[in-house]
Amino acid sequence: VVVMDIATLTRFFMWCTILNLGLMIYWTLFCVFAPDLIYRMQSKFFPLPRETFNVIIYSFLGLFKIVFVVFSLVPYLALLIIG
Image 1: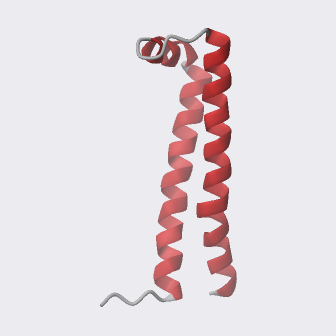
Image 2: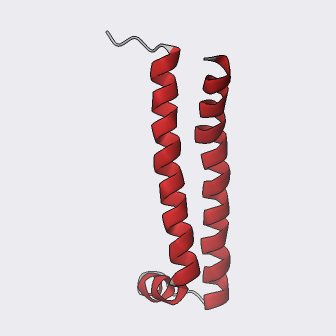
């Protein structure tokens, strides 16, 4: 039987936050510094115009940021406050 106390949940959400933040930073840096590489790789699978591709990739990045804040960062901060 695993007991989920506040300390365990806080550590869990801390690591979720760290991993998700690292993934978001990695993805953002890739989009900023290598957009042509990403477009060339993805256009082999999904032939889209460049403008459409840019809108889709940045929309997904924005969606990931919202999901990260709502499901990782906010629970972690709430657990820190009540802990």
